Length: 307
Image (cartoon, rainbow, N blue to C red):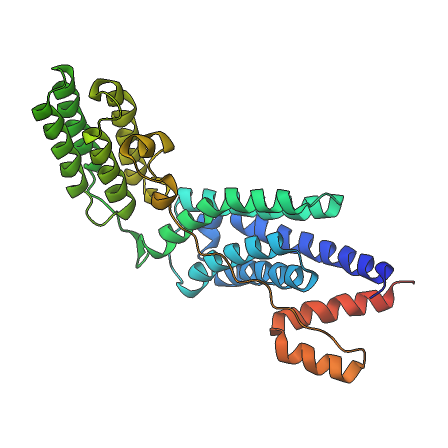
């Protein structure tokens, strides 16, 4: 394809993407209400799907992957009519949308680099992961399902105070074991939360490690456990991860306790023959209906515009 033709198709894609972004923004700005409007939810889903398809066709992987993540979250709302969207879920949707909008804007300005795209994806992934968790893990029949008891953070705080009192009395082998046992007790407060289990187990190893005096470890350790308990109480368990400092004190590789995110599959690549009929057959066999519709629209627009 000639460079001039490629530029025209890029311009058309950006125009279409901005229209789809407008549809998404209008729906997401008041999603708590709009989620009950099935037609509007369908329009938002189609908008994200179309951006994903166009970006995949043109090879803009960061846009494709971000649109795909947004599409997946909207799919949950689409397939579960009546699901209640709270303010935090709406905010997460908007933050994910802002990443997609930023990527498209950078593409329009001609400065969408691979580094920028990868950085944007890395920053957005925890947002989408948390949103997906809230939609699929915490929502049952439209009602909030807490991961832990309502007094979880209060229970944790009470144990942290006991740990602090023991540490203030001075480090002895017996007290060190008592503090370690309290770390283990903290783990029992949320047995179903994997990130909390990892954090409390890492804390237990740090307490019994000879790498640093217990008194020096106390401040960072107690603060980290307190902040983590608050995140879990708020439904943000996936954001809990042992800090590099705590991992170092525990003799644990930080990479081994970091949450893993499956890498998305690389976009499918096809070679399109020059002969129109054969090209059409290949596109029909490999593209989804929405992608074909978007492609057809772009081609029609290209034919209408002067060369």
